[in-house]
Length: 396
Image (cartoon, rainbow, N blue to C red; front, side, top):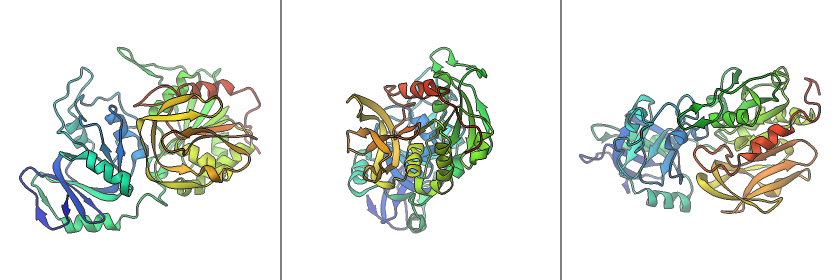
């Protein structure tokens, strides 16, 4: 690391990371050229980099991969959690090598170029991860120039000027703009994705898209539901018009308190209408806010595919996939909300359920992708309960 200064990088330094405090890290740029400003975080998953890059929850963030070999299995059109990448860029230890996987259709470097995402290789990602763990997730600019020329003072000014994720509503930026139906089921090696079956006899789930991952929808389909997706800004009447048997609150990026300005009143109306509700990640945080709890910005967040979570009802431990920088403050839960899961890493709240409504949520990602499948049962539990009582009728 070096102090910020106007400079021309060395012959191999075609990438740079400039922190808001003036610290700079040089490396080898790959992917698209240019610059992007955001929050630097780290992810400990050993696989699934393409899913991570396309997860809308990473909007506004630059991902440091702690696993050194990123890009070595290339990229393909099947391993996408959204149509386009949402992470601003990525930082890796080793150079991206030629793909070695029968499913690969393009080099990861080319995929990054095509999608306008910046990569930085040759970085001591262990040291960077320790910095984030000790000092919190910093704001920074990642930049790539084939010539190795960088206007460091300008990049530093850009990093300092960025306000950060706290108070920022990003759900509107990544959400679908209109409603649509989803039928694709889970993926199987050699067969691809199941075509699904949108029979009218199946329970109907309306998924509110705050930045949802496709594999969530696939798991809802696999659990026996038919699914309609609506935008983050959908009103209660918009949702009621679809006559759902239950409503799903999706994951997404940004500050839940900012998104909650328009999302929480809708969720409260759904609760009042006795609508079954299941939330994941941002959806969990929004359900907590709707119940009267508070959310907080975490020091470093949870991002990885190996997070142990304890289920309080029976003491069972699930290994989960996580990606969040905000959390519901357990001490702020009202009397009608009980904790159901806790993180065994730091004791933070990882799940809640309302005692006077058919609504529950988890902070982690039971759909994984990447990650373990210990928690797939949550989709089956949610869908199996639909239709057991009268669902919403459009009025409250």
